[in-house]
Image (cartoon, rainbow, N blue to C red; front, side, top):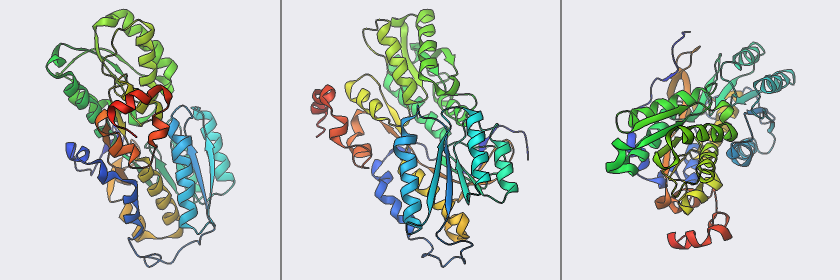
Length: 378
């Protein structure tokens, strides 16, 4: 154990190579993992297909959790267990206390394994320890929880920030050095926030003039909007050259604040998660970009890791956890990190549409039909 700042330990930095081809992230590519190990050849299963996976997700403000992550994990567990396995799901609605209660209930109900996306990474540590004491493996999902977790599945979150910051600098071009930029960071209780921030600052520091920085409690769009109003009052709506927003929910709130302040033109605003409304804002020219994190890969591989762990299929489990990370309490945690893609107007069709996240009809509603036609989206 140590008290160091969390860091990615064994991840090779691949920079822009990860952005080169959205097709490499095609959701159909997930099937490749299924062929590894040839079924049950790696080990005699500790348990059969009749397993229960506990899934703890942090909030409902982030649209992907309810719309994609839970259904995808549930579907994959069913597929891996011939329909005999089940997922018990609970959403904390941004409350660490509620999530702790939900975690305890899953321990009391003796689920076989827990996938947890922590509201507060530090606060969840006691629950992780209780699960460990009860013989229940815990896999941290999307956010790195503290305590004796067995594995971690997410994205290279420092790279997420780098992609956001680099995209912003490139968009500002020759105006970058003189541009006044507002930073709207995430929740300090989320360990990913520091990684997003570190990656973004690696690109923004020295390249732009960061005039205001805010942390956003519980990733709340309302908090982000209030903070953006403060920035506008201090800097002037016409003098803000760009906004680094760590995710799409806050990006929407930032854009609303700029509109309400009378902005004649919305400056470049970043985001993350490829929420449907964010993709529509990008098409309309209101939001500059978002980071698309292929969550089908993250969710399906998390389900595989959970099932393989319970069934004692070590070969398959190890094949999915060839990287490692450190948390403030544990070193060398087995990890699976999914690559990320900068999504702009230029690659909507090759990313979220091609991967089946959204159809063109879902994106191109009446309000966005003309914008879609200009981009050739059908």
